[in-house]
Image 1 (cartoon, one colour):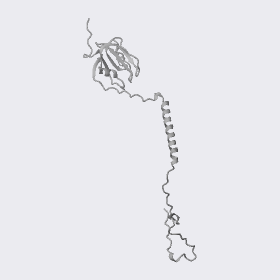
Image 2 (cartoon, helix red, strand yellow):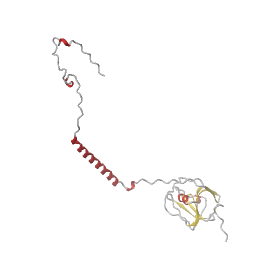
Image 3 (cartoon, helix red, strand yellow):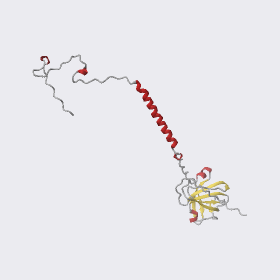
Image 4 (cartoon, one colour):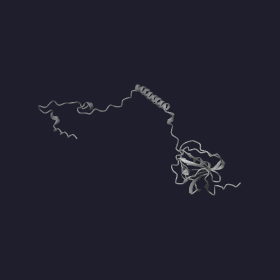
Length: 221
């Protein structure tokens, strides 16, 4: 902060300048404030805008807007088709009611998919299966019901099962493939398990699954 300046000694202005001093400066009392010594100039008053500059500014603004629009259009045209937003990832369906199925000495706890919507979603997007757990697909009619593995993350083995519980054939299925896996004859049931589950337990075509509420005993001739 600057130091304050000392005040000048007062003197009697009616006696004129002191002897030997410089000639005193005089000025009329009516002189403009800005002409007085030490006066601060007043700021200039408002000026009228230059009306001739407005058209030039408007033209410049239009040119800038036109260039911006052209740039955005060029970017939209040049964007690759592959840059479209990815579709939403399907969610796995909630756990379905379970039923117990006997396979030789082994007890399977299988979710039951017996409606169109639950059969369509199946084990899609599931990331794991518990020990001895799987999904049993139940159809209204016997037919050549084929399966694929779209949106299915787990490698699976599927057993196509006759009405009496006999395994018609077993197929291994790779994750996220669209290969068809079909029964060798019309069936009503299909059981999906972790890949290799049947082979590890010595179960193959001709083996019998037991579930009294589902599988009927084969009728005798």
